[in-house]
Length: 214
Image (cartoon, rainbow, N blue to C red; front, side, top):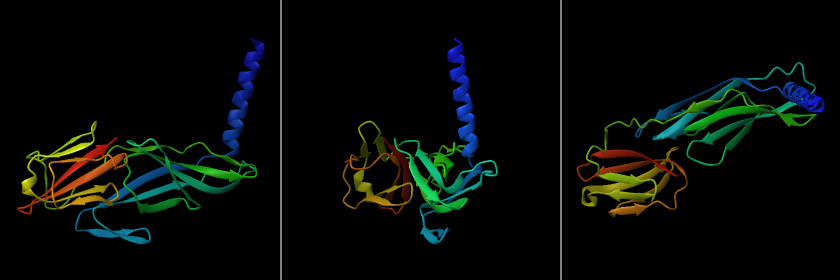
């Protein structure tokens, strides 16, 4: 019992030491701008044309006064809610701005050398949803589109009414586009994530539907 207690104390001391040796960034913040269809604007060093999301990340540098390790760079982590993998971006700055639609968890860590190591995560920010607030666009109140997430089947109730159909991802990238409209589409070739279905009817009404592909 005494040996077990000593081992636990040693592990606790080691954990505290490692955390102190590789301090984490603090005050992590996330925000974004949604550019609607027909609009656009700046996003860092680039310009976006809607629909598109521009995400802003910022944090404060850790206090490195009590560590001998040298801070090398930061890792920005993004874990999408509907995808298995975590996406990592690296930077030497304490801020990042780029085109990305975040629906999930984001946080930042600090990477050190001499000795090598990585900090614990900063505070984690969760964004549960993304808006689709497009001008002159109606919701699918007539239920022209039905999506079954289990079979990945998109059903068009009345394809004769539809002039054009487009599928874009959360960052506004076009994944598929159709002018000869079928009654069904199976989305097996689309990766897990959030997608926007944009339909233009023959009376020039635009309908938007948001779907999640698992």
